Length: 382
Image (cartoon, rainbow, N blue to C red):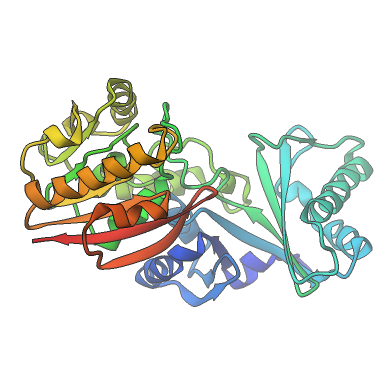
């Protein structure tokens, strides 16, 4: 009997994303007519009508971090069970001895209490599988593997999956230069979705740094798929991958890319070095030159009406605490005096600074940016 993996039998997949994004990711999957959508630990499980649908989701989703295709599931109270079950997988369906691989591991309420140990069990099984069958094994490459494999153990029950995204989907490919503690691309997109920004209104980032919020706004406004710049995908290793189908999927979305008028999106920063970084990054995206960039202190920005999305410095680029508090107070004054009839979404990496803004907030949303436990606040300026 022909062996079928879980994702092949059930068209079931798992979308990993930050907990704060779950509601918006769920909404996105519903709009794509996915089925059996269930919020789970650190993500959402769902089903597609066809395996090819998952290629589209990878190419276009701006909030999902990675998508996993489950291969097998089994009770996993210890190393022996992991090793024996992983050895049952026909690894030549996805790997050759000439390719490289890596293992990710995560646990929840498991007798095995070390995710690195669980990953090591999988690695040993794959290495032994190839040695027994081919006399040689693929190498481990943690940085840029051809195939990434995930083992997740919850309540002593293991799921072994393919990471069919490859590198995290937040890595769009446009960011060649970065600021200190930049906002992650998917968090920037999440902020824009909170409005929700469509690219119709004027948008300003007065602390633009290397331009991540500007880039994500541009991609929304111009309907540029989030995976537009990516060359390598995990699903290239799936037996279902068909290059012609993949090219058709890209063409389907790329033909909707549209222009934007110059100055609709505006960014400024007091540092000329940051502005130069933003220019380089934005040039990597279609119509990136249409974004207006100026080297300017926010206090010198002329009156603005529209949407403000920004991530003010919160220590690394500013230095002393009192200087930071003074800057945020001045920024609050700028919003009150020069940005009437506008709405601002501000990410505070240091949430203690929110009170220094001196403005009433519509909400304070806890969201992590890397390891920083910050807050997104919304301010309506009348």
